[in-house]
Length: 311
Image (cartoon, rainbow, N blue to C red; front, side, top):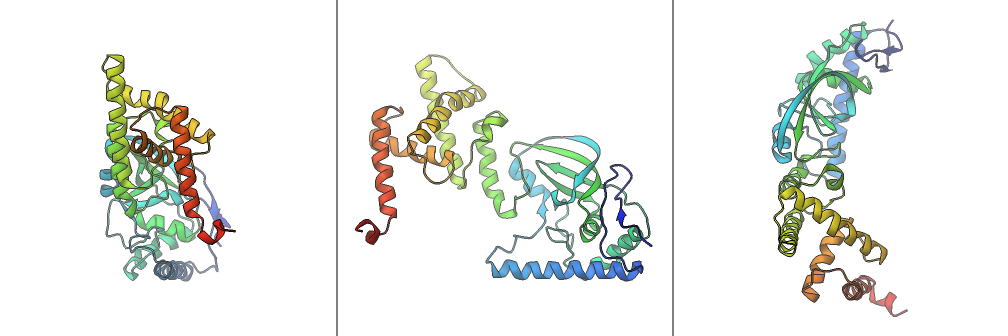
């Protein structure tokens, strides 16, 4: 009989509940595969019903992701225990698995079952090989092992990890349709090289806004250097803009109730553009705030239906 819990490997001694065990490993492995295939098919139906793009559930392609994020180097981290849920991509675009490593083709069955049966008979799973980019992992070797681990409800798996360093990070919500925006974010990071803690504060939903903000920062830096009579490199310009312009402005706008809707960066960008349109000014004085308040108040009134404004 298979033990109630089974270790992915001796390295991390990680354990996870095993899927249903009837005592017949071959049949159980086939059931695991068929169950995973059904889940993949049902997920595709749900995607269409919810109007999501055809790429919503696909594995992230490593080369395209790294190109969008901007590769800066890599380092070998050796053997580690990683979370199965963090594995969302592959170096191979023709794997036969979806984003959750559920098989999308019956061609995967023979190898899937062979690994599944071996694990159910007490074998240890060799570590997989992955690239780490930000918070996610991309499989180099071991796609079927990841698929079986997911089918057996493992939460962790042992892996040989090579970390790829990028200009912009990636989290587990990253999807293929996000890559164009990430590309613009990468260019912004190159033009405005903020330290990581400051960079985390910059959040924009629209790809083109990264270019607009970069131009704004560069223009601010040019005026600052003219006023101070000295040159600054991009790193110093970015840090100075953040501490002397962005942070104080955001705090002022928040205290005066002008940051309404969207992220603080979107509010800063919108109100900075409105300030220049109305006043041709680059300062945040009391007169500017009052003028912007009137604009925000009118905008808020315009969002209220006419019948509600008249009651």
